[in-house]
Length: 180
Length: 357
Image 1 (cartoon, rainbow over the protein chains, first blue to last red):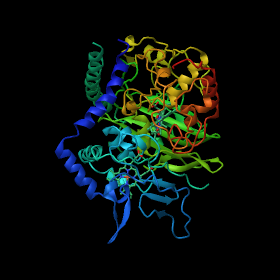
Image 2 (image 1 turned 90 degrees about the horizontal axis):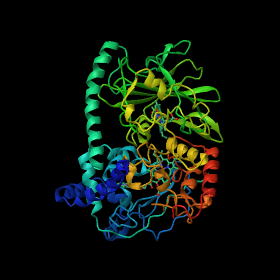
Image 3 (image 1 turned 45 degrees about the vertical axis):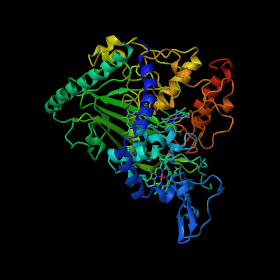
Image 4 (image 1 turned 90 degrees about the vertical axis):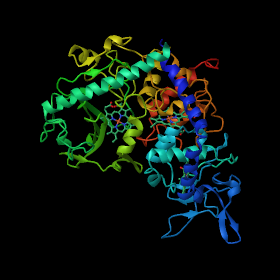
């Protein structure tokens, strides 16, 4: 009988994965896709490549974040009045926070950031701007403050869609701290 | 049988809450002064929250009971004073030993001082809608009164030296810690108010001060305590040193790392619960692989606690860091708690290698 708290604990993660798998709900996924396209997630999370008409999102790497082979080792050096810079792929951003790299939002079980997330944590992340809702502050320019104003159903739809985006293996580097 | 029990306790808690809500509305009506402000809108001045009987002289109202959790939260060496005020006739429901429910109208205050100067006083109030209100009041430089801090907090509330500042958390960040577990009230609980105070507890100098469980029981301020396994609970550990480490993790980490809320999927439970078996916290860290390496963590730190090897234990690396992407806890502190690092290091060094593996 003393075990019950533990029993519950073991159940919780399971509930999370079951919910994620059930996200095959086609209407929810469709709405999620619509929102992801309309709200500009690709702008930062899909690398830009040069096309005939200028830079365009490289959909073969859709939502897989900053490409691991593009190595960046230090923040950009800029002069007044500039405070930041972006990489040509628009997946690395330098500013007073150091350098942030956009996350791999695909369903890759190894390198996709959402593998660590439950649906509830995803919602909470968008509301608090913290990793998994409660961890370190999510760095700029991730626009969580406006996204956090979406209602629960819309955020759940985005999560459901992202959980089934085809996996792309791409290990996004850790952020680089600002120069002291 | 096991699961039914947890289900029914949730149910009864919900029921109790509803009943308590009704009851408390009546009480607030009768008492008249508890919540004169609108829902979700804290009073503008600390002196309007009912903390003081004489605001000019800063004399605390004697109906506000002082208390100190035996395993306090480290906040960059801030000295803290805490008070609770129950609505008149209000009784705490302690039947879930690990998550008490409070009567509507309950108020808590926690005052932070650095170098003898009051800097902020944090405030919680259980509103008529059953939701806790969170606010912090920042003290004027002359120390006369404190006004409501901005909703986003204040990053540079007190200079700690070396370009570091104690910051007042924004209300969203209050909830990051306070809503991370089964109970929003964190330091007023069965374990934290045990009369069997852990004399070795870190920063627990004031741990013996203020009211304890026996006071609540003797004054009829709590019900449901017959269900507790002990009226003077002590963390079950294999040594005094281990007990104080577990107490520290409970007070500083357990509000997020527990089995009953959002971060349960990490499978790392640092919250001591009376209904857990002894050793269950240790079980989730000692010899347990890290789920995800954080930026700045060394490559050889593959275990949360690597017995005998503090230098490659991920938990210790995160406790010892204030690099934002690595540090634990992730907010509310900018200075490493050196005493905690020392006791956790020693504890890990003395763990037998075979343990937990």
